[in-house]
View 1 (cartoon, rainbow, N blue to C red):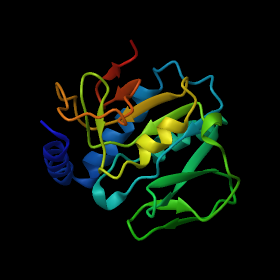
View 2: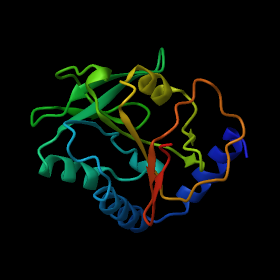
View 3: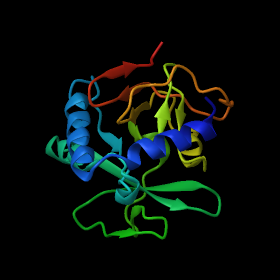
View 4: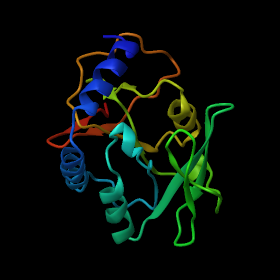
Length: 189
């Protein structure tokens, strides 16, 4: 399937999940993440979930990161140029939901992309090669292209991978891992 077809398919699949299912599957994903060899790093980028799109709730992952005393980075979107600015999440960070339903920091301590060691990547679908389909604006591909080549890119998905996403481009950045409620997919070759 191509990206457009996959977006339609997985938005529909997510829309059929109950809020309780989203919460339970999100907890399962957070528990799976504990098995990954990533917890000695310091700087972790996390996306803040859009509840009305039934995205994976990253609240449970956030609690793990804070419990392990990690530096948590969150982003603010610029829809003019489809870029993200990154800020350290602190006790004083004020979050505000933007017009697209995305919780974002109002401001804060900026963190450069090359300092981020692990990125938890939102997605709608992924394939067995680690390619992903997001909402199609390119925010994360632009962001990941600026990260250090050693930065770990970890997708989070309610669903198993597709065999192949047909229309991958050179600007698409593949994942290193993808974590579902029941399995961890290792994409590192």
